[in-house]
Image (cartoon, rainbow, N blue to C red; front, side, top):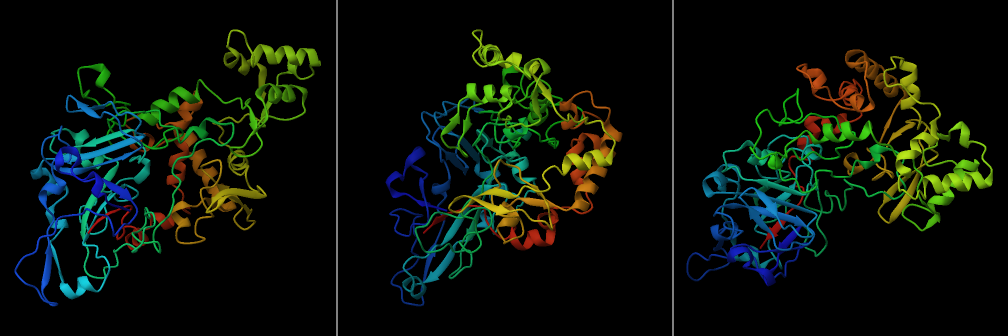
Length: 534
C-alpha cells in the first residue's frame, strides 16, 4: 500500500508523483480535486476526476503516454539507450516499467476501469479521510490483474513473471511481441471506490498488505518468494533464488530458474532461443529459455561439496572454519552437510600429518585450484540412477524426509519449529526453512505455507516418474533428466520428467489453489498491492 508523497510532486517531467509506503491520510499531495458548481449543501456532490496529466508523461525521456514505474532499491542516473535497453540502473535491485501512448493505453489500461465518482458533502464530512479510488500495481501472482479490472491476462504467476526480475519493460505501442504487457512481471488497474467500499484500505498508517487483499483481514503482511542462503548449500537446487539473468530486460521473466523445467510460450518447443533473432547484433540477442540453459550448464558440470565454514545456527556466527570442517570430515569426527559424501578410500584412514597435508592441498591450495580437485577426493554413498524404472526405488528416494522430527519455519517473530505430522508424513519444503506453517492450517497458509504428501501420493508420484523415464530415457546426464526435452513432441517439450509427473498426479496437492471456483472467490476479486490517492 502506497500513498502520494507531496515532497516529491513534480518529479519526472513535472507530471508524476512519487509515493511513500503505507496508507497515509495526511499526505500533503494527491490527485487534484475538481469542484463542479457554486455553493454546495449537505446533499450536493463533490466530483472527482482523474486528471490526465497525472498519469501521462511520467518520464521526460519517454514519449507521452500512460503507465507506471516500480523500483526496489536506490536509483542513480537512470537512462534509456536506443529506446530499448535500460542502462545506468545504479543500485536498483529491480526496475519494472510499463508505458505506452494514450491510444494503446486505452486498450491495456482503459478509462473504463476508472469512472469519475461523486460524494455528497455530508458523506465527506462524516469521515476524517475518504479514499476516492485506488491504482493497483502488483506482481502477477495469479491472473495478472487487480480488483475491478476486466482485463485479466492468465499467466503462471511467479513461475513466468518474476517480481524480482532485474529489469522489465512493457510498451504495447511498440510492434514487438516482447513489449506486450502480458510478458511483463507487474500489472496495473484502476478501481473507483464507492462510499464505504469493501476495497477501502484500513484507515491507519500501517504498512501495506500484499497478494490476497487490500485489508489486514484478508491480505498478507509478508510472503517469502526468494531466500538468501542461511547456511552452506549442499545441493544445486538451493540456488533457486539466484537470478542468473541479472539485468536482462528481455522476457521471459522466469522465476526460480534452477531446477525449473517448465517451458515458456516465448520460445519454440524444440529450441532454447527464438527462431528469428530480435537483433542482428548478437550482444542484444538476450532472449533464451534461461531455465533450460542454467540447468544444462550447472547440473552436469558443478556440485556443492558442502565443505564450507559451518555456522552455529541459521545465519549465525561461525562455529567451525572451513579447514576444521574438512579436517573433521577426513578424520571421521563429523560428516559434511551433504551426508552422502564419504572420503575416497585413500583418504579414509589418514594420519594427522597426512590430514593436514590434504587440507593444505585442497582448501588452501597454493594454485587456488582446490575446487577442481575436490571431486576426486569424494565418493557418494547411495548414488541414485535417474534412469531407474523401479517404483520402489523412486518411492525410497521421494520418501527420504518421511519423518524430520521438527520442521523449522519462518514465524511472525523469527524462526520457529513445528512437530512433524504422522498423518501426513512427507513435508515438501522448497527453501532451507519453510516459509510459513503447513498449507491449509489457515487461509493465508494455502498460499504461503509448505505442503505434505501422503504415502499414496508418494507412490503415485513414483509411478508417474517411472512413466516419464520410460518415455524420455535413457538420460545421458543429470541436466537432461532435469530439463524438458527439445522436441516436436508437445508432451515431452512442455516440462521435464519430474514436473510432468507432478502435473499428471490424480491426487493433486495443489488442487485447492488450482480450483477455478476457489480462485474466483479468493484471488480474482482482490488486489496484490495498491496505491491509494485521496
